[in-house]
Image (cartoon, rainbow, N blue to C red; front, side, top):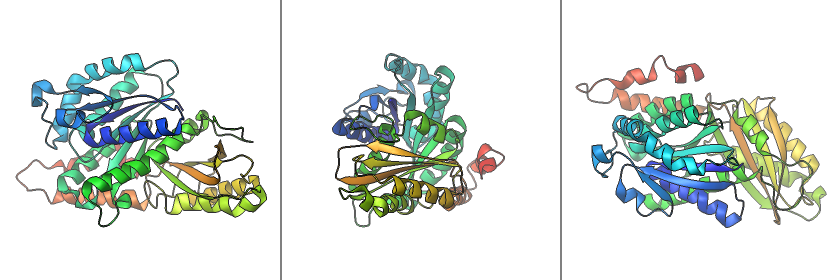
Length: 359
């Protein structure tokens, strides 16, 4: 899938950078271009990407201070600047736009849904979101921001792939080191997913193509992506268990949104040397994924690569009913309830809206 990436906010810019660098390092060519958008000059300066500073008339390049309502207003006012910067990058080969954002801060959580809405209005390609859920220790404001942002993002995007910070930060890591490791893990998962339709190394028996990724995400709502790999024998007959174990591990321990196995649709791409991939193992893995997710819409195929390992990339779409999502939403609701009564009650953000229908 030839994609254009747009990172919004600090976390969005850093994850977009990681995705671009992974794609370039692997030589996939799936990320055709990338842009970072922010209200803070200090967050844009270190990025090796083209950038757009928005909200200069409102915050003078100093950021929105975690105020996602202000972040949304700024993006609404300055979206034309972002669209102008994207226009020459939206060539005929672009098959999807991915808007990347942390959902807890101000610029990303407020601005990303607005930008997705505007992109959907202008372009006739899928507009996906890649959203990062804040960890439990990131403060009540981040939980409330993410709860508000998520419901709007799910409504506006063709699909929203979620990354749960709590699941990927290792104990004892520094905050900065932890986020860098999370970005690297997520870049591998999403980067391989985008590249799955761009088979450039060898010829597989049944290669996953871009249309299958798009059709899987057509279920809309929330999605998760998983990855796992292990060494492979030269004889494909010896790799039946290798393939099935990789797919199981990708789902059970490698999902960007853990425990999100109740899905409307799924896709499993088995990556590796085509001569080592077991067809029997791939089919067994696909049937296992059908049973695990409760969905009959599970696609499967090869991702040819020159490697002595076999890897599994799993995409699950329509995971709104997962326990992990419910736990996060309850955490966000509790953060709303704990807010001082003197402030306007934002609890209405969780009532009578699309997110309730999804759940």
